[in-house]
Image: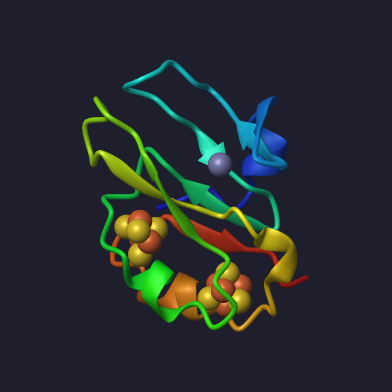
Amino acid sequence: AIDPQFHENRDQVDEHEGHSVWGPVDEPEELGIHGTHVAVDFDICLADGACVEDCPVDVFEWIDTPGHPESEEKADPANEAQCIDCMLCVDVCPVDAIDVDAG
Ligand code: SF4
Ligand code: F3S
Ligand code: ZN
């Protein structure tokens, strides 16, 4: 499962489409965590798609990640600022790849 303390345990190593990327990153096998308020651990995501289908405000967009061992697509939290903290995505992800800080 994604580490809910990732912002303390990891370093912000990059930005992608306006959100943070938390390392380590070693493409294409290791992609890190995308997002901060809505954080997706790309190294855990296996492209189930439930988050993309169920988010009521379309926070997620598919991006291609060819060569990643878990899946060649990831749910990117492209619109994390729109999140309404409903926690559906956290509940439906079968591999607990998503953390939403509703704090
Ligand atoms: Fe979308 Fe709700 Fe997840 Fe926020 S908590 S990203 S609104 S499903
Ligand atoms: Fe990935 Fe989980 Fe969404 S596996 S596509 S983050 S439901
Ligand atoms: Zn991203």
